[in-house]
Length: 280
Image 1 (cartoon, one colour):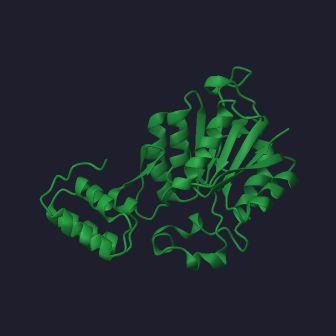
Image 2 (cartoon, one colour):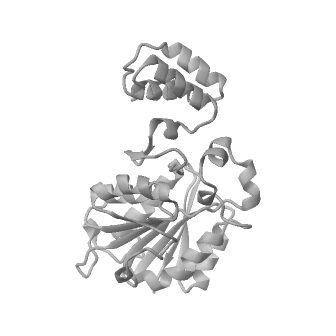
Image 3 (cartoon, helix red, strand yellow):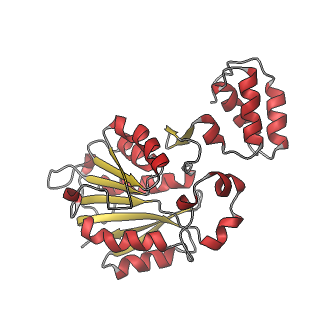
């Protein structure tokens, strides 16, 4: 339920303006904006920004993800609902609920050590924050190359005990994690360069290109993550990468080339696909 508005602006007028701008969920958005605005003038300015195409989450300052309010600053990639499936798949592996196993219930490894979990290309830190909230008893590290995203991730992850690093993929991670990561998740950019122009304006105009552009075939960053993953994974550790249905077979092919056993998990309702590789 959206919070009760704290201001006197007409909710009907707010809904009308948002609907005229093409907002499909105008009523819900109007309630959310009214709930954070401090005055009628502020609400008016927020509606103008939304009607101009700014993502709702950038205006609110947060995104709803896995039941959490994830802080999202202007210009930072907004976590998608489909990525909640990536969280669920990682959680299952951490709790030993799949055939690939490697951990016991409660998030503890079968050897009694604390599982090391890494969120690469973490953006706002939504995936890492959700795993911390759901799977207590993990050592979580996240990294991203974008300073604005890292600042958001620190606010979302570090209060819960996680660690955020600024740099390129594995480069900023503590060396002691090499060979002992239980679960590695990556929502790396996977949109082919030529397809960026076809994306909704909210994404292509207001999110950093580095968080979207995956190179000519969309797999450039995935290739780098997968090629380096075996050296960082523990025995029986897993790498999970969000991908698209059209790219999925190539993603698991890259995993097999890297010496990982691989499989696909899919949620048709969310239109979500995750490639999962496991170290021997």
